[in-house]
Image (cartoon, rainbow, N blue to C red; front, side, top):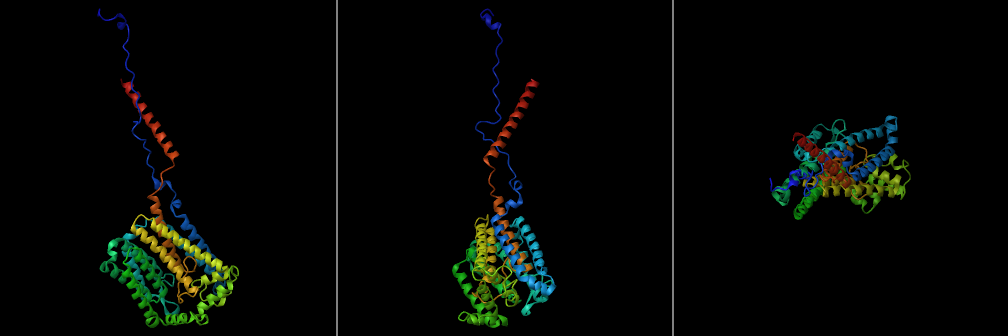
Length: 441
């Protein structure tokens, strides 16, 4: 040890300082804890507010006009002005239940149940022909003492089945064997059973809605034009020869009324008179005179004419604008859907509601021959209101599923805060492990 310097013997050899332990490598990004997106939102916030608002306004107009058109009739029949109105409220309550349930259920489940729904609907249409209640003009359209009309259900079911079937056909839609013929057969079966009741307006609604869906699915325009011509010829022959006698009279009076309004159907004349009385601003809510004696069924088929008389052309135009807004929103939901079934379902339901509204308005303004079409959301009628609200619920479901699958990430401040908390927690765990190791050593 003589060669070793003396100062080294007396010095303690310094140990190298331990390297700091990093909780997260510099090259590794901080991981933000996953967030269950669907549970973080209240279910009401996942519903399309725009569509709900338009639907709510239409329902409010319906409540107002049903009471206005039924308080006198209700007093004459039941001795109370609100009996019919309270029935409408009950129907609206049931319809709201259906809307909420179908909005919360994933719409894709109905694709698997479409065939079953169609078979049940066909069974109900056959049952109403065999056991249905006789109504006005010797028609059989309702079951269960007039509370359930299978024809209304057939409209909704046809749209659901068409969306499922057309969505699965893809390029086969343009095939005559796999596209055109099955489509024509299906529509003929449903429409034919409805015509046997007879219910011309419902059959026309089914045919028009299904035809437009066929077009949206990518049908060949030549084939679609050919089937439209054939359908028009069959409809003309039915209405002018083999159809019910009242239909022939309505068609002939409509043709006469195109040149001379005084020769038009009595119903149409009274509706035009109601619009004439109302002018631009109307005679005032509840002040219509036509609804008391002249307009047939003012709370159902003729309710748009009462709107024109009491709220004027401006009020009637506002109702048309509401339907236009609903159609625009429904088609937007269809365009943004996540699959072809959702697109066809939302578009088909929107078109179906639009056809129903357009048919009623066209009748009241003498553009088409008289039919028994009700005005969606506004006219009195349990079956019609429930199925239309169910349709809106399905559109809401399409929009909701798309929203839940495309939820935006949390705000950047929340993500930074969550990452910082995770970083501090990680450092605490690593520091605890260091203390344990040092103790053991």
